[in-house]
Length: 142
Image 1 (cartoon, rainbow, N blue to C red):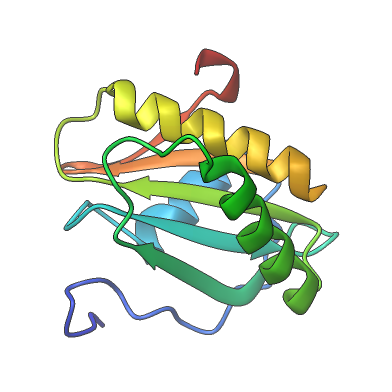
Image 2: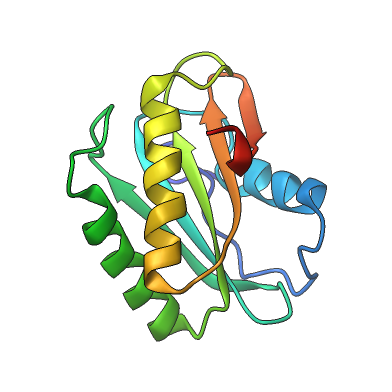
């Protein structure tokens, strides 16, 4: 079922652990799907890699992060993780366009990697939701 914004409504979390990249990709494809507008999604995982019932959209992110974006994003990740009891985070950059990461996507990816490290919360996966679906981004390729 889709919400009025066109995104799938988050169902009750699935208890199946997300141990492989393929499982994470499948879950994100089901929950976020193809891009509609620029935003960031944060999904929290428990210590056993199970999705917690929290999928947070961060709307209004600019095409390129600002210089102080790491500190602000670290605070958001830390607060969400603490309130949910999360052990790790999955980040999904949503932006209309092709599947190839542009400079803005790579810059945001680097911000998210640094922010998660600063928050002390491992970044489990980083994905890009684009016009045709979802792509797993290699954190080492940013």
